[in-house]
Length: 450
Image 1 (spheres, rainbow, N blue to C red):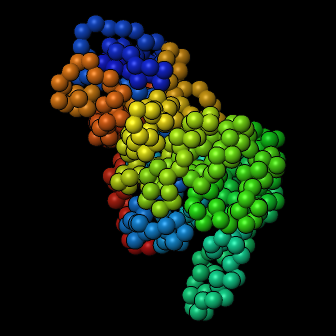
Image 2 (cartoon, rainbow, N blue to C red; image 1 turned 90 degrees about the vertical axis):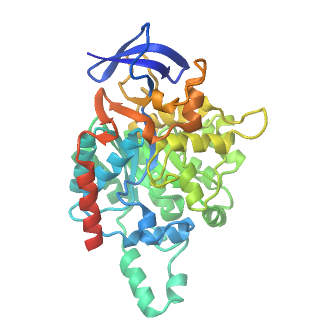
Image 3 (cartoon, rainbow, N blue to C red; image 1 turned 60 degrees about the horizontal axis):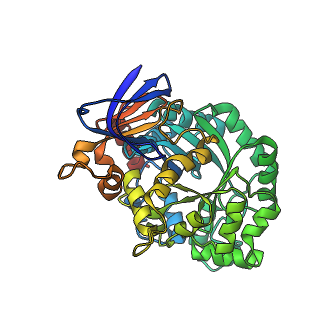
C-alpha cells in the first residue's frame, strides 16, 4: 500500500488539509489526518480530464496554420505526413500527461493509413497502455461536404484545373454506407477496447454527416449503449450553414432523431442559443468547452457561464490547441475560469464549477463511467500531485485557500506526479512508461522526411 502525505487536498467536494492518501492497487483505500508537516508540501487534486482532443503529435503552428479561422486551418492538416500510429499516439498522450491529463478523449479524425483501421487503433491503445492514461477513442464518421460546407462542386468548378485536381485527390473520396461505418466502429472495438480504452461513435459534425448517417448512429447508440462524440456549432459559419439546412433548428433535429441523450458529448457549442442549451441540459448531454482552441481559431467564446447556469453537464478540453500549444490542462483551467467568471461581485462560473468540469464531468464523456473525479475512499486512484512549495513560493500567509492559488498560478511546471489507476504516470516532469523525448525526435524526423 502506498501512502502520500498531502498538505492540501482539493477533493472535488471541498478542501481538506494535512491528509494522508492511502492507495491500494488501483483504488484510494482511505484518507486519514496526520499531524506535522508533509515534506515536501504536496497538493493533491483529481487527475484532470482532457475531454476533447484529436491526438496530434505535432503543433499545428509548425505547418503554418497558426492564427487562422477553423475553415482555413483545417486544410492545413493535410500537410502532416502519415507517421507510425503508435509513435504519434504515444507523443500526444505523453504530452498530455505532462500537462496533467490522466484521462483523454481522442476524436480520431486523421487516420495514418498504413494498415486497416482496427489494427491501427490497436496500436493507439498500446500507446495509451504504455503511457498509462485512460482514453476514450471516437472513430471518425462522415459522408458529406468534403470541401467546406455544402456540396463541393460550386467551389471546385471555380478553380483552375491544377488546383481542382489537387483538392480532389486530397479531400474528395467515396465514403462507406452508414451501416458499414457502424460496423467499422464495432470492428475497432473488438480489436482495441479495454476497461481503460473505450471506443465511441465519432461523427465529425452535422455539417459533415448526412441525416441518414446521424440517425443510424443514434439508433446504434441506443441499442448498444455506446457513447457518441461529435463537434457542434463551433464557428459562426457552421451556425449559418446549419441554420439554412435545418431552418434554424439543428439541435431540435438532433433531438427528433434520438441523438440527444446522456450518451452524447458535443465539443464546442460556441454558437448555441439559450433555448438550445436548455434542451441539451434537459437531455443530459455533455458539452465540452475548449477555451484556448476557440480563441486560437477565432471561433469565439463559448457561453460556458450560461451552460453552467442552465444545468448543462460541462467538461473541458484542449482540442490539441492549448493556449501555448503545450497541452497544459492547469492553464486551461485558469483560462476557462477567467473567461467565464463574469464581472463585479456576482461570479457566473466559480472555481468549483470549473474544477468539477475538468475533473469529474469529463470522466463520463470519456470513459462511459461517472465513477471518480473525486478524492475519497473507494474512488479510482487517479490523482494529480502539485509541488505546493513551488506553487506558494512566497509563503506569506498560512491561511490561504489552496484552490485560489491553483486558479491563480498553477501550470504544468508545478506538477510533481500524475497517478492513474494507482500507477505513477508522470514524476518530476518525466513520463515514466515511455521514452517521450526519443519518440518526439522520431516523429519529427519522419514528418520532415515526409
